[in-house]
Image 1: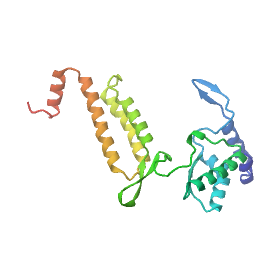
Image 2: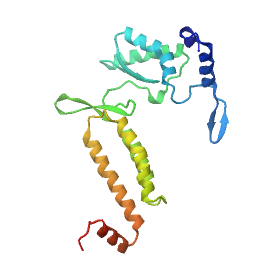
Image 3: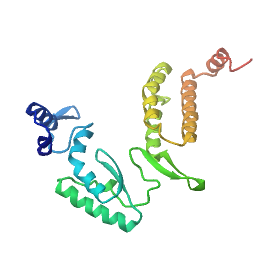
Image 4: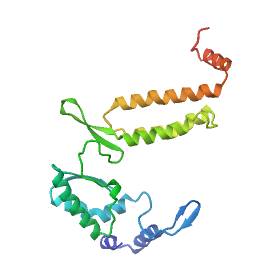
Length: 219
């Protein structure tokens, strides 16, 4: 709030933002007070607070990518990475921020996840943007839940849930340069849907009749 007040003169706007930061949250059906952090979806406020970090990295001539509180800094060696990380820890301490140790490390850029993406080295020395393995597994878990054969949903409901989820996921990862991944996922999803449909038809006679109706059997 101190940083915002240096840039914003409108006290009504400042009051609104303060209320937003102090708003209670619902946990397990109960409303609770929140003592730290910001509500989900506040990257603009993160930019206000972390502007000092960005300016320090720029002043040092370092390449970095940051969105909200996720940040990758790119250097040439392990030693340089450790030096930069130590400096950033001091900056975060001054901002009263806690580093998430589980997600913080110095390592080779290839394979590191950032916003669901990762970088891959291909033959010929080419570097491509790919969907991170963890993001793919999360996607598959969601598809498994939707197409679960004992889920009690009709195929119309399954199709509607897939239409709600898949276009957004595909749009988010549209920058990925690995079309083979999407082709494999498409094949896998079709297999899941076919298996769910066969389970709903249940009996062999029903499966035979429906496949004939669809023109997939000639006799």
